[in-house]
Length: 84
Ligand SMILES: [Zn+2]
Image 1: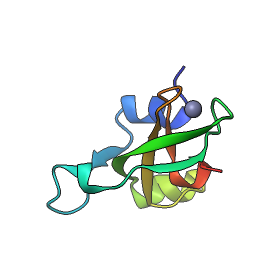
Image 2 (image 1 turned 135 degrees about the horizontal axis):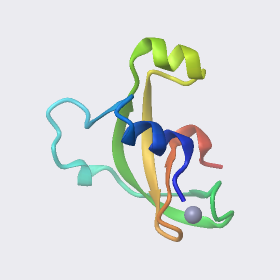
Image 3 (image 1 turned 90 degrees about the horizontal axis):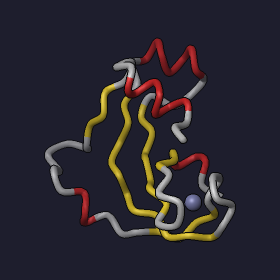
């Protein structure tokens, strides 16, 4: 199931971008955290940054730059502020 941010991304409202000149974000260490989707403690892989146009970020009440992580257990991509 897509969450609202992924749905917004598919509609083209946001741009996905990795930070700076880093095209291979694999240097980012995985981290362990509580997953808001499957409610387990799981490992997360860093997926890059999601940059929102400022007016969209303000309208949605989110940060203009959100770091995204992918749950190894349920394969859901979640923003960093949703990790528990
Ligand atoms: Zn999960």
